[in-house]
Length: 320
Image (tube, rainbow, N blue to C red):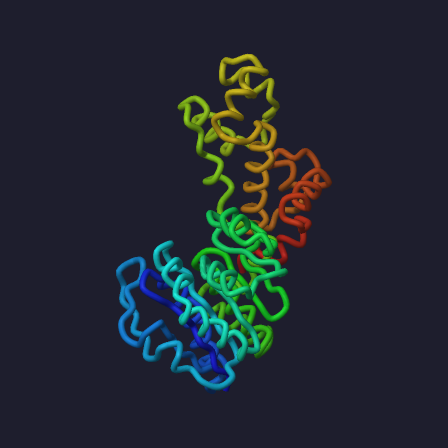
């Protein structure tokens, strides 16, 4: 039986713990026998109050764990919880001790900051919640931070993005340990994708980009998302906004932080992703309906943004 230890703390994110925990529990049901044993630990045994107010009970303190373990997972949490953990030298010594005795080490969300503070990410590729990637890179310059992946596996150390990404990472562990069929069965039982992996953006482009401060810009952004197949050149958009092309480009960029052309491309990519995931129509049709003009233009955009071709994206992410 493979022993897994998950570390949490006051202010931790509950789903960072329970997400992977449910994956490992479902694996036992899928294989029909106990394959993993999981201990949830904290700085001290007893109730731990999570960010949402839900209380988890840690049966053991991290110092109570002895002997080698298979997998050590560090959950994330709010800034105060992370800061308290990092600033506790005895606790960080225990983190290093367990990491040294584990076959593999992982973090969920902002738990990457704890691994980085322990020196476990030095010289490695890593990720964390999209909103904290810049801070992780700035605080720990020896870490190569990648902001787009759902999870990053670099040797024996893995890091995952925000909250539910811990489920994706845990499923990848199950696939590695027990095989593809079992991992697929677990994913079906939990009603999640088996692979929503590395190259996929962490959050919806459409939601991310609809952030203009000026009403006319925000309204135009929403209109673009609904009309990706139309002529969305700067000249046409400027005419719709009743501005000169040069003035429109300046106003749009100042209010959204991206150029009109870049926004249009990302809106079209988001629309194409949805069509590829949810329909059977051919790639050529998707490209035309989403405003790319040709499948080759769409392919270049996908490779640039997601590092995968549209046909490969569909194979990975299409809903059953």
